[in-house]
Length: 202
Image (cartoon, rainbow, N blue to C red; front, side, top):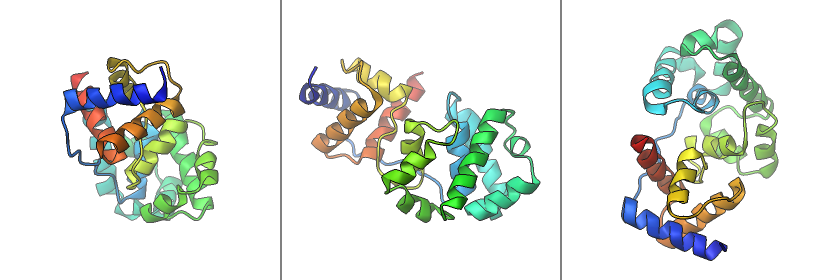
């Protein structure tokens, strides 16, 4: 299957299943502790019922962690696993690793992170943190207002239903990007619409 036919098939599936939109982008966060915990803890968990309530609770309990420096101060004195009620040493380690990397890179606010992610070298640096893959890099961008696709199992399943399968991450992301452009949608809005449809269906 060539790229043009993949885009045509995916676009037709979007219209048939989701309609013509418009599709609102995800809400995102303005609290860096929430951003870091979201990207660290969400994988392979039910987001709406398991992850989101814990992040909202953390955000309320740690208002001073709205910046990376504030979150780093909290991590130095408090147990993140207890604060998140999430007993996963590997995910806690990912959150610590992300915090250290961002602090070392001079990132303190969500605005800082959104700009910082505009440089490929910084996106590559994120992937040196254990537990952060290419999808997580795209996902963290959406959490701070960048408009892109984070291709997860839901987006792969949706594409497969359209007859678009067997593509590497970057290839499928490019097909989604071209589809959004062809249909006149923002990438993050279409990403979120597909994710909501498939996650609720599951």
